[in-house]
Amino acid sequence: MLNYQRYKRVPVVHFPERTWPEKEIQSAPIWCSVDLRDGNQALVEPMVVEEKIEMFNLLVKLGFKEIEVGFPAASQIEYDFLRQLVDRKLIPDDVVIQVLVQCREHLIKRTFEAIKGVKKSIVHIYNSTSTLQRDVVFHKNMEEIKEIAVEGTNLVKKYAKHYDGELFLEYSPESFTGTELDYALDICTAVQETWGATPDNKIIINLPSTVEMTTPNVYADQIEWMNTHFKNRDSIILSVHPHNDRGTGVAATELALLAGADRVEGTLFGNGERTGNVDVLTLAYNMFSQGINPELNIENIREISDVYERCTKMDISPRHPYAGKLVFTAFSGSHQDAINKGMQALHERNGEYWEVPYLPIDPSDIGRQYEPIVRINSQSGKGGVAFVMDTFYGFKLPKGMHKEFADVIQKISEKQGEVAPEQIMDEFRSNYSERKEPIHFRKCQITDTETEDGEFATLAKVTFTDHGVEKHFEGVGNGPIDAVQNGLESALGIEIRVLDYNEHALTSGSGAQAASYIHLMDVKTGRVTYGVGISSNITRASIRGIFSAVNRLFY
Image 1 (cartoon, rainbow, N blue to C red):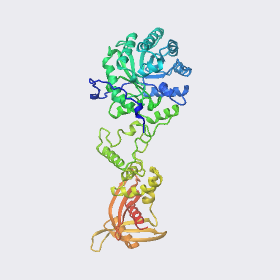
Image 2 (tube, rainbow, N blue to C red):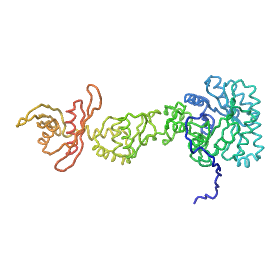
Image 3 (cartoon, rainbow, N blue to C red):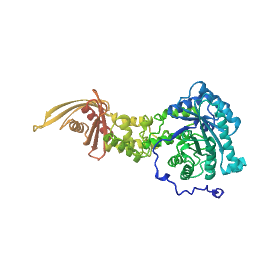
């Protein structure tokens, strides 16, 4: 049995004044990518300089205006990378470069050397403030920890005097979620006042969930408590930096935005230490799905995925929201049927808004239009197979045929697992449209005639092969299908009845192909099946459909 008694609950916030549960996200926050710092430091094989440049260029293309590029004072590779960005003039004028540094003078001095020539910079200082780390890591009291932050702020002010670009200060009380709220407020206020923040010269106060310790609502309470207790709130950009230790990083971030956060630090696909940082893409696509402009250029998830996997050497989970290979795929029969009907209704109604069951967004909006929405396995139903035939190949199977053909595919999927659209089409051909033996229709002549009582009728003269032997028959009926049916009954000694007939065009323009579906019954046994014929001549397509059904019923 799990020894759950080894663990104690993290205290929650008593904050009955909370207002965030009544709010909705209205607009995108300020986005800051930390892929090149948090993300990179968590890789088994950290990116080399050229990979970092490729990732940086992607982030710029996606529209990030604040990008943390690393800890240049602590790593020569990160220092060289930043200098290459400057020397190669790769930093757009509207992009702010963020650098991380501890509150130590030699590191801050080196940091300012690294950002020389950068037009806009955020110097991000931090120190851990949590109860646990004060005790077991630093062995310092509250005042001593606060003094580290204040001294770091003064050092940034000192070296900023000689910096010729536009400079912003960011301060993070690391492990904020494990810090007493009144103490977190005290230390942040001390940094704010030391820096001299004003509405025209704001300071970024970043409240990280360095280790996710509680449910998302508690983090939201912590953020709103700080938001309402800050002095001179109009001089602060309130930032959050959530991690995903409990698997709720996205939810925690969304609630933090409701609680007053202005800015989010995160990574593409949630890369980062342990279980990762919050996934900026999921946050942005979630907003997009609610009709909110995410203010990022994320229309092509394929390109984003390709660059990410190449640079990080990490694979994206097939169940990853929006980017995973399976997230816009339905295997369940009932889901497939609902998607099929939803897509049809959307097309017929020409609605303004996307409304399709099980698909929160149109996959094509983010570059996923070439991937199958419906995939077929042993759990799939008749609607899924029909959807594939319609979507991929243009065959609109009659409703009565859905189950018959789905049963064919079901047997295959039970043996091998997933059945690809190409294999489904191959089975359709072999079982229906190319089911031409042993009774093989060759040609026909259709003419008008009269019955013995003078009524209008159709005469069908048909040439066919029976096990390779050429034969002929004539039939008279009230139309081509009836005439061929009557002739076949006499020629083969069978009794059949056409129960239903459907047809539709497969292509448009001259020489267009048409598909005909014949629902046929063997009168003696009561067995029924469908036959399918394809031709540029609708009469010939119908006759081929009859022969297809006869071959399925009797041979």
